[in-house]
Length: 456
Image (cartoon, rainbow, N blue to C red):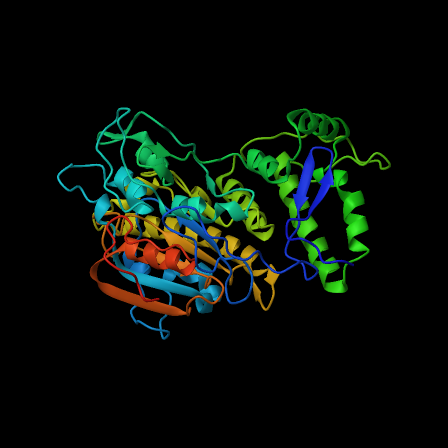
């Protein structure tokens, strides 16, 4: 068959299902010069030829650092308890120690470390202390990426989480709730609200057409309990006839993943098939009541967004800043925030370690899904940079130096992996962002409080 465009989709009533990368597709789009001052004049594709992608995942309240930081540096390091769930990805990760987020410090403003830790995390800025409308922060790295390279995808960026964003209110020692619930900032005065509803995200990824057409498609799906894939299967079958064996397998695996995500979104195990005796299941929608189901579903949809090249930049907050959620499902019966202030209490330290380890287990789910998607001679994980961490170091001390930062993937062989790297005291976290932006061709003189670039 003739070569497929990377923008090819499967179409149906009110639906457009983007395709994963297939062998039959044309080479990735060449870089285009940006019209802005920070010209996108470098590669947006890695050495593998696949697009470079980034995701920033945030956990609140810092980390139990004694069980996070390895003893040895370089490639001869052993993971401590908290990161044991991601041990199978050790060769594809870099642990970065010694990085500092100075903007999250008080700097004369008193309390509010939790709000500042989120607001400064991707901006490197020191947010103005206010709970009024006069919020002021800085642009975040994900939005710099989106402004420069977002032209290449349907969505310049996706901002996601499990708890809703706020744009006002008092949340932390005189800081606006806008700071504690948003880590993406379009500019100094405009946070970018998170999407927390997996159904809404699914519809954004796979809905297409006019408002009327999408409405008709939804009514038809609801009436006949159909899958969104039912509307595109005729197009899919036509496409498969011209694909090779490998592409057919890859397409089947992808459509299965979409179907599984949809089943979770609508909250049912089966959809009604008119020719069968399967009973008529309801199609509830909304946010899953169970935290783990909610997180995993959002992470699964993030994988699909990358897999279809619908976006190349995503952010995800496991919870908002200062969360006191308990995790009884893993034996952590005290609230997260309360136990992070352990005061050397053995019981509280055990509790915070369980919570940190549990979050790493959810991270492992995401990494495994990314690594299962083959792209060229690597995987979706290999062609991405996934940053996981917090804007607070030790939760008991509320310090913002020696942050827990882990990178997974190599951005399409942009750097080596499988190492624990320790940087000198007070090295700005924003130096890392300068490096990451440089590797996708975005050249800035500075970002936040940066004073150089990291060698990773």
